[in-house]
Length: 175
Image 1 (spheres, rainbow, N blue to C red):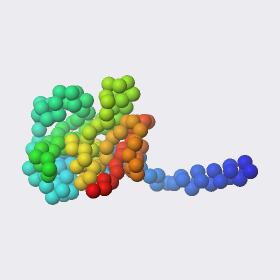
Image 2 (image 1 turned 45 degrees about the vertical axis):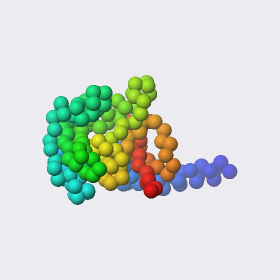
Image 3 (image 1 turned 120 degrees about the vertical axis):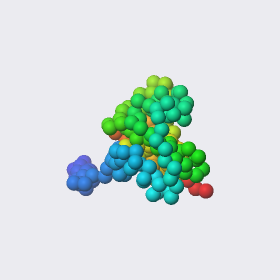
Image 4 (image 1 turned 135 degrees about the vertical axis):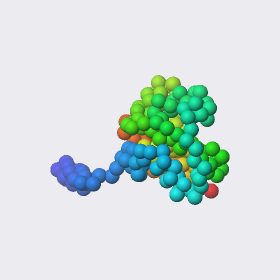
């Protein structure tokens, strides 16, 4: 009996490996953007809105997010801009510093583990960037939330993040 179970397990493992593994982490989030111009162009093309892109300063980011949220996100942000996408008069488009999306995951996981952070980030994440309106980013742009606690949403689509204990999550709302 054990020989059959072992043989089946080996066959299953062999069948699961491939030369082209399913992407995980940031790579599973789609095209990697390295410029704010690319992010804004993609949002414009995806929504037929966001024509009024305005590059913003770090001070404006602090005003936009408020002091607490600014302290959480700012160390990881390279630059940001705003535009309007209904129903948001001011939607934030955020480009992460190189290799800082993983650092944000580490920060958030540590904060959730120690109780310094009480909830997951409210942004919607892409590969190298985020949108400050999570629900719009997820529903209209196909982005994902970053969760560093167990996912309690039925039928959620979950992709492991780079940091153990964090995942990228999306789900379909039923209206």
